[in-house]
Image (cartoon, rainbow, N blue to C red):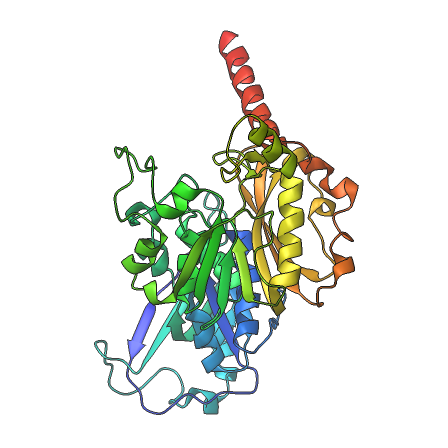
Length: 442
């Protein structure tokens, strides 16, 4: 793919719009599976819905969309990190001749300009309108055709928010942990969750608060819980290279302060995600989280009453928390129940599900009668493992009998047992090392 020549010129008058004008969306060629759910979510957040004039090629950087208004197109670009730019599409063809014919057929009243070629003074420093010619050379960098496969001509409307990826980079963040979320994925998660201004967003595995930052950037009030006292309070060993201990002001609040978002920070509590702490009420507009898988962070919860009694018999005081194993199957069971109970109607749960690829089918995705599956996107971790970003929407009010009516045995068996995913993750690493050693001996 090559984006061709960009043309800027001055002209008077506002652009007229038809009932469903065509727009050309230019997308970044990364996180390909995450792009369509993000665009669909953001269009619905702007009051529209996804529809295409023609069947789009999911992996292509060029999508032609029908969007009701330029205002909605601009609203989309104020949020997306997956798209680079959007254009009001005036012409499209497989060749220069087809493009010219297409432009001649574009309604003149929609141009509010003299017909091409443009006449009048060109103002490159302060143009009223910017026009682009974009050329599509396909998606195979090893087989680039001599001539473009498609040509597009359109009026530039707006750019996306790609700069957020660099300006919120974890590399420059004040407080980080072993599993701090990549900035791009963090914003994608907030967009999949349709987070908007004045929402209340909750992360039950908050860690260093990376997922709170993206939601706060979009104007939501944020809070979280975590079982790890040292992480929430910024104590103990540092995760940053060449730094032994965390500094006096390394904490979640300082992270939001770094980006001027402290006013959106409600609080973070020391709490066990397996224990209910909230009053029974619909409290959150979105729950966005990255549960621990047992790879870089342990899956833990506070001990059972039986374990606490045993500790008391050994002379350990009751107020000391006993840590016990927290199976992934139980983590997802508790997470979906919490989302079903505490999300507002229409609120969204966005979370990562680790997957051992040889065993993966869609049936293993946890379900709940109160939650509808919206999207399921894969990010590769290794040759044999990946994680899937799951987005669900609350469609039914929670009732007591909904608590145990989901997560059938065959669905959760793959996540039963302590460190179930960890063992599979490292079994693949062990096999790969053994194969490399065998190959080297030949």
